[in-house]
Length: 533
Image 1: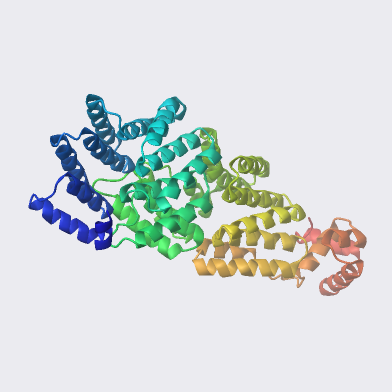
Image 2: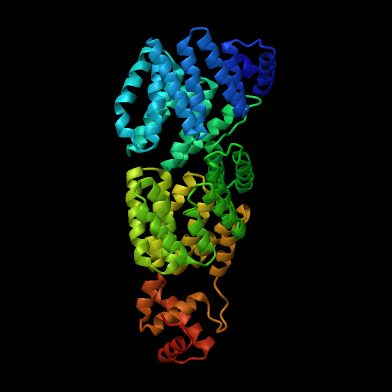
């Protein structure tokens, strides 16, 4: 395909289409036309060209080449979510090979494309013999496309069976050939998008980002290429959102919704609307987010857990907790539960159910050990720190929150880092470190302002220490509350990590400001004005 890539895919398509109209394309030319049509996003023209090439190879008595065209057609249809016609083309290719009775690499394509739908339906264990046979056939023929496809299907099968590490290793091996430009453009584009989708599925966000960046470079090197298709569009939006590129993510999510609406509509349309809703929710466009979540549901994508987080933003933690609890009852897969548990923890804390939040945070930590992905470890530390802080253990929360901040920084996730900084600020404030609290909260505020995270800015303003009508500083109010609890100066100093001399100075200021003369009067004042713990 070097000529087409040098010429540019649009120009190649135009030239090949003109030759087709003049009946000057042979079977190989029709294959090149099908590839150029696919790479420029012309799916109908691609299907027509593969069909024509398939028939031409049959006419010329080349059954293996005819079968390969059928399988290439099927591969594109599988990727678009059109399983019924894809299965039909696989069956046609299989029949042709069976009638020909020759040993060829297309036999591996037949085995792999027959196994793939079963793997996707959860029957990975049942196709082990097929995959092993396909890999053996690939080993006898030097065919880079079939080899890459075998690694891809094997990776999917392992991930479906819970063997995430082995599955990801198989995907990486497939991508070595793709990155080295050893496979056809059709297989390369599909491989990039499928690997990114699978990495996202197992929450290996760092690897998904790396392959997305590689895909962007691959696309940029090919003039006229339609760069992102189907689920690849959706996962690109998700990665842009995590990176903090919200304006770009919003534009691309809107474009994804428009382009995937068809005709024909792609099965990833619901996921595109879900990503659009996520960005709108984070920006505080709650009515728009609600509509996008509903459109995601109408297109077949479960709107959770995003919809529950929207309910939290709308002040309905009861609805959020009920929905996320239902999702946990329905989910068994570790990666699926890892997506829900953070929203459940947040909902439970907002609803005042600290015990449920603590239990969920513990499960999330266990899942993080199983999946061993930086993203999940950051989620787990974030949740644990939030629960400990809500339970009043600010000192215990700090190490967890520091781990979460380091994890989000490693993943270059500014919004999640800022949310952790808010919790760090509250923990520092609870421990009497007013200066540290101000540093953390100010850092979070700057990120929220840069991103346009309106709801978080509102919450941050609500967390600012209120001006007291009694003239007491926040620290003086803390000391007064401890006096009302009957604690001596030494105990107060130990709890607030300050010296007894400093406690005595605070008490002197309190007595002067409130015109009190004893600890008993101070305690009475605290209870009367709701300052006692």
